[in-house]
Length: 590
Image (tube, rainbow, N blue to C red; front, side, top):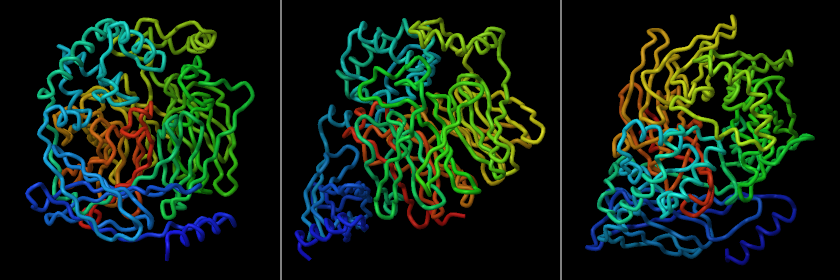
């Protein structure tokens, strides 16, 4: 079939409203080094060179085996570009026509120290920054590493101290709780350290080498949204559709992974909604922003398959009916900034209230909200939480309340953050700034707190046995909590340099006993076999891939999204959703 005939057939299908799966082929790629020897563990990425309205054409990645060969299936049956990438080597790029089934490429070793350093992930650069104080470095990672990567080219660019002062002021307005003393110290330190590293590329440490398990892995990416988008969280529905929340545009983007077909659902606004949200319109001046609601987290009802979303910037709960495409908006009768959300087996919707220090529950059957107030750490914090309505009103009037003094522990904002439902129905959550996890008993309403032996518990999930797995964001570790013994166990992540990771979130494949963790700073996804205590690292195709969430599919593959804010930090400025499929042996692990 000629390329012209294929185009005419596709145009005809689109004209009558049919979007077929893209025609596909297999492509075999052979990679050799400069001596002609096979090059194993090279990343081969194939990207379509055409666009189809309403369809996100999949980008496919595989890794070469010991023979230097990789076979990619379901490649777009049209001209494609192929890129081969391997650490400490130069990228090799080629265009392949629609009829080709084979390609051979030579990849040369990189010898330039600057080029080698610039190709290393951001965590290597961030690890080399010497702030002269381990506590300050940890605080910097916690408060300056949750929107985009530190150590990226955009972050380490030359800036004056005055420019850094303006940037830090803006980041605190956006929501960072960088302590006041650090706000004063960091401009000089960052200017000097970034310059030192740019001038001394040999100071950038090596990262973890790619390992043989990658030869069986496959990675698929779909470009969704644009440079003004932020794909914050993702959810794989029971229908097989994947949903990504565009936090900056109030769009719920629906993707059919089987066909690439996409539908964008824009969340409606309510009267009185303000650009940038109701917390001082903190994002309204960000270029291209279109958020009024602030879509953050997603989960699904086990009863009717409706999705429930947190509208953080509007303090609203949002319900989406996939069968009709309609939204229902619920204004919350109490509290501020609904954050992470989970729905239990009784169809009760649970979510953290990050700014008002609460856990909220919406009982769908009763149509009633319940709010569980969490304990304050200090009298100052109690007073701050009680005064929050006044503080936010002043913020909305333009008073720069974000410039009030901030201490290292963020007194006044303990920040309830991650949440999950254990197999026994109990609700567990984290408080990021308080270094605590907590539990709500839905039957009695009892709230109990547990102090963590580490700082920055960010998101958590329960495994099949009811144990909790927690990301230790600022320390680059994974924590396990056993509710029966009330004991914590800490695991170092495999990311190198040690401690350089900032794991944002995780999920548990309960069937296989695998914990999947976001390698947020290192362009990777990490898996941990609970029984064997074995790690696997899966490097992702785009540099500056900032992942915040992960969902597990029935076949053992996982989905995540590149949610860097802003998107132009990403290598090509394009947000994507990503599927990582381990090799067959990995996926079958019991």
